[in-house]
Length: 97
Image (tube, helix red, strand yellow):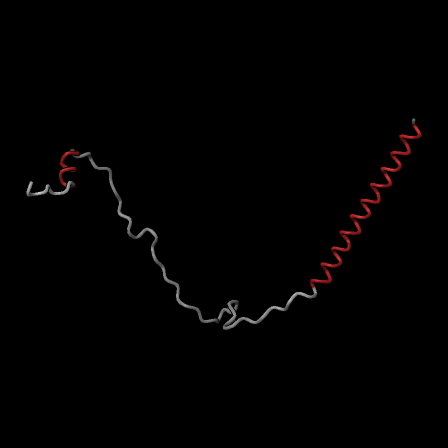
């Protein structure tokens, strides 16, 4: 029984080493292919117009607008009678009935 267990462990250990070696080879091949293909990348093209990194390049002016310009401060107010407010906001009654 002991010999059988040891034989199984030896077989599994050999298989795991083969699998690890296979993965290492695949990863190494992928790295070599990636390095070889990086030399095939296209060259950069020149920009049309002026270079944006040039500090002397002409650019359009920058405007400044306040983001809170229409703000008006609303102070707390005392409540007013609601019936008068409703009467002011209600549509005019129809004439002719």
